[in-house]
Image 1 (cartoon, rainbow, N blue to C red):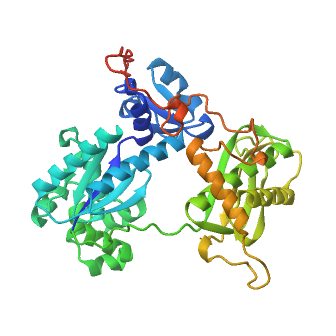
Image 2 (cartoon, one colour):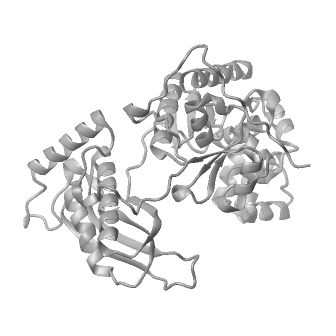
Image 3 (cartoon, rainbow, N blue to C red):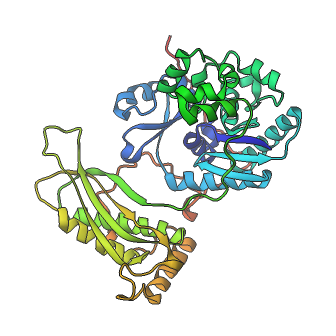
Length: 438
């Protein structure tokens, strides 16, 4: 079986460009929730030396000097683009494992290397044409080598975004002979140091090592890495995602929250968001943990990390019950005198909604059918009219506590009022000239 890894290039920045093609060639960065740190960079922004994770205030001057387009993160839009990309990939492959929001492993019948490369190029062109997102594709006999091939494709412009690890063992060893072993997925600094101390310096060295010898100092992990580097698959694609074990909804506040009612509103909002995820996955929760944190970067202020758990009997996916549980959790840890920076809820004890039962079997009724129908109607209206059009009053209207998104792109693929409009023969926006440091 031939395997492939399709990885979207600079995904969040690419989504911003897909919404606004005038940004092509312009350096782009995307900020985290609350416009705090850099979480995505285009290639041009990387070339300017803007580091990943840098607080925006530290790079603001650099961005202004070089005309960097700065966008607030819009995860609803990025999730929509991800779904579109995965849909195209699923049409092209025999098997697919969605690995993350911007990565998927694909499975194909075995074929010659030249055909595999042509296949990768066709997939890449199809994704670009239908979504506007560029992807790099690495093809190989194993998932480990797919990851390596994908990195090689990204680092070599001449590859055109597609790289195939040869199926012939001799050719594969020749290709991997110059590549350091720590370039492999799963080989961190500690394992790389151990491997080097035993004379395994390159990927080819790992592939040629005796499995029994590897197991003696690198364990089963090292042995499996060696087999995968040799072209022997140790893991198949997983098309069915494992069921969720927990759900988290949490965000930092746009300003420190000191008012109990405002904190309760934020917790109700996160409980409702977590409830929506439950319903999307057909699950119910038997426990809610509400929490709040102060700003650890302000040592001059009183610090606290507070949380409280509430059992849910019967288990539920009802946003109203979960919002009420969040208020109950807040009552368990609320204390005045703190400036809260972040809050959220965890949902635990998840189980399929069609097989749930009360926490004490035989002693309590299950979730009422009326509650289920109400949530179904609310979801249907929001799907038709736009997310959060119908919502709980307890989640607030103005939501002054919400994080800053001062640079949010006006266009959207998830809001009917903000859809992009394509115009033929329209004027092109001038591109910003990038000035690099000497």
